[in-house]
Image (cartoon, rainbow, N blue to C red; front, side, top):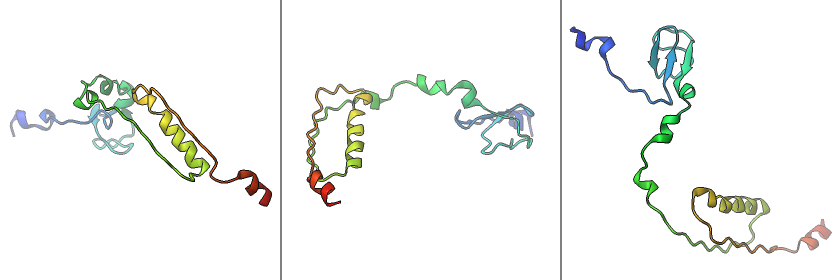
Length: 122
């Protein structure tokens, strides 16, 4: 075997999220456990944690970042449980977090049953 094809010359790619550095054998690998797959020691350091994963923040914008939509939503929901109403309100308020400008948000909520009558019966 010539020097160009020796094991030290092989090129491999490991995603930063999975990359670990073994302090004992000084090898970067994607060992799926807390044990180095090369030397068997447990002295592994997550490179993602060390570097903070900052490389993903600096990736060039994709075409999905440039495509924008306008949304007008109308929903008539009857007899939704209180817990479901809370989830719905949380999801609607998250629209602003998605980067869109919410011009107007109007909710008209009316009780579907007479709560006083239900409480008297109970």
